[in-house]
Image (cartoon, rainbow, N blue to C red; front, side, top):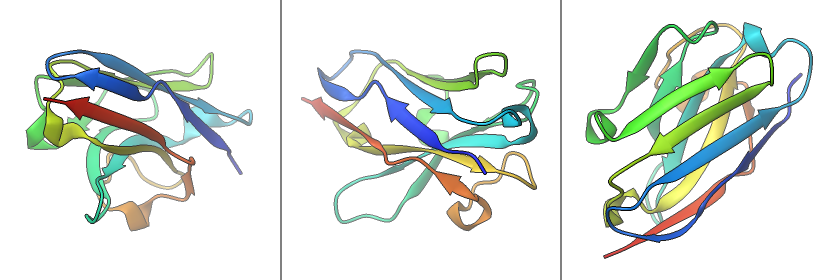
Length: 124
């Protein structure tokens, strides 16, 4: 079992950058495919980005390609989401998720563990 704790959210203006961090507990972090999802008010949870166990492969939703970068440090049990050129439509609660059986999945149901979320608000 793994526990996930997100941090790094906040209130920023459009065009700014933020880096979200997700700290994972447990000695087997490198066995999990990891991802970031987000959920805006009154909307369903949406896939943002995923990274393979080794970190060598990544996948993004089209709306963040070229602006967001997912990365991981298996030695530190960390996964990151660097967000540049933020837009008001990026406003959401961002969640870190871990998948014990697959890599690079986009459906929330495929993920086994979730953090509590960190809120990102982008003002215009």
